[in-house]
Amino acid sequence: MRVLAVQQYFGLAAKAIRFIFARPFYIGDVIQQMDEIGVQSLGIVLLTGFFTGMVLALQTSVQMAQFGATMYIGRLVTASMIRELGPVLAAILVAGRVGSGIAAQIGSMRVTEQIDALNTLGVDPIKKLVTPRLVAALVMMPVLTILSDTVGIGGGNVIASVYVGIPTTLYWRTVWEQVASSGFVLHYIPTDFVQGLIKPFVFGGIIAITGCFFGINTKGGTEGVGHATTRTVVVASVLILVVDYFLTQVLLFLFG
Amino acid sequence: MTDAPDDTKGAPAPAASQEERRRDSDDGPRLRRAEDELRARFGEELREGEEAQERVGVSREAIVELQHVSLSFDRPILENVSLVARRGETVVIAGESGTGKSTILKLILRLLQPDSGRVLIDGEVINDVTYEEALVIRQKMGMVFQGAALFDSMSVFENVAFPLREHTQLSDEEIEARVREKLEFVDLEPDRVMEQLPAQLSGGMKKRVGIARGMAANPAIMLYDEPTSGLDPLTTGTITRLIIKLQRELKVTSVVVTHDIRSAFRMATRIALLAERKIVFSGSPEEMTASQDRYVQDFLGGV
Ligand SMILES: Nc1ncnc2c1ncn2[C@@H]1O[C@H](COP(=O)(O)OP(=O)(O)O)[C@@H](O)[C@H]1O
Ligand SMILES: [Mg+2]
Image 1: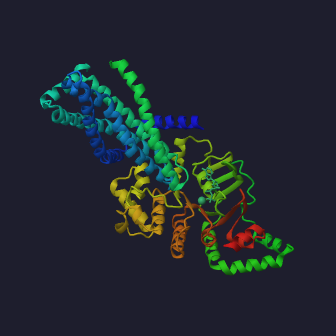
Image 2: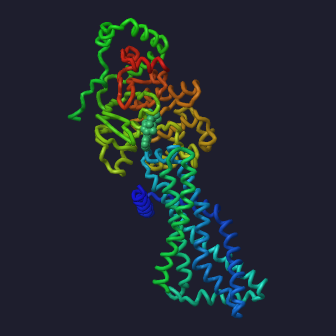
Image 3: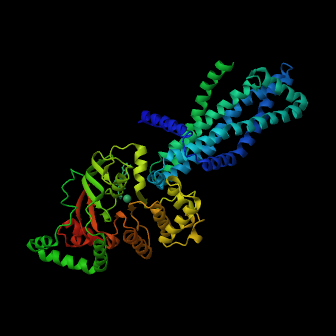
């Protein structure tokens, strides 16, 4: 039964990806989904990003003080935010907010026979419902991550200048040093950015497909919709953390 | 259609032989009393049903056909079920809830595939068509779901326009004209309801919009799942009249699932009664009231 579910999960993902390139394109649905994802998660993503950056600065300032290296706070905050915490935290939050929303929406369409209605009207529900959500998540997750990274590094700036007395110009110079230190792809794009954006792209896909998968497979009325949302949050969060590890290994191998 | 199954149950038995059998039976008097009672109760509905049959005439061309279909989920649901709807006919599938009536509609739509037996639409066997082919075949059919199943994120207009946008090359003006026409057909005022969301509509209005959406692309076959369940008697009458209007004016072939025997008698050219995985009776409403079958009598008496 489990094996079958895994197979169905990947089948759904494959079909949804294939439909990205096939007419008709439901552009209106994609834009609406992008709007929903943005509106639903922008607030929490910014808020948590800001506090994460602040706590990183606070912790590293204590550690760095021991070596008299507090001027490098900016580098550490930046490396942690862009490579790891920005993408993962934003993705976990979006999984809780948007992934569960997708599961609830599609799950209630399942139990009220709207999915059957789509099928009956000669439209593949994967094309009409899953693909737009997938595309929207693939686009929006990196955008949200960039914003989260930015306010996070900004939060670090606040702590660095208020508690440690590092001038803002110095802070941002160390931020840039960190970004430049890991090299550039194609001469101009910092490697850290590439790594930091591949992750949210993949996580966005995981969130959308997981939400749609549990939504479409909802059984047993309104209660089933509740199960679908909880499962989505749990499974998507676990998948994000596990995939993050392996993705990091691959990215470190590729880019160093 | 060379190997059509023997359709003894489906074909209306000659009235005379039915009469004779009734006379010959041992407990004739009891049954005759039951029949008279039923006639008294459903007289008006039966007259309407007769009209429906006259309108349909003698078309013999099967549009929807189930041949010896069996299907199990975790337990057997349907066993050796055969059913035919000929062009222009309105076949009602009656039966208690949980007997597999909705399942039959899903088989016709190929949302489900039978374990054995064949399902034919317009003479074409649809058992083994691919998912993509099924999407195309379904465009011949309009389905009205029990809960209407309107897309709740779309306005009434977008709901009715949906099949047109998906499968026709009609311009925006043509689509709007068609949507208005269909809404008017189901007795809704286009200008009042078009911009409303399904959540703002009453149960009866939702059903009507569901019918308008189902018929938007002018399908040859209409399927209804419990079109009158959960509605008040007045609205039940309205929806029943609407289905009869569709049959009368547009000559669509209809398969209606219901346990509302009163509206069944009004619109059916033929009624199939489903019980314990099988079709236990199939015939005209007239024949149904005259049936000696104990289960049929109980079913009619119990409603
Ligand atoms: N997808 C399914 N999986 C398992 N059992 C089902 C499924 N769909 C329907 N059933 C069962 O099949 C029986 C018939 O269902 P249905 O066709 O909806 O009955 P009806 O419409 O006559 O009330 C019910 O007992 C129902 O529980
Ligand atoms: Mg049903």
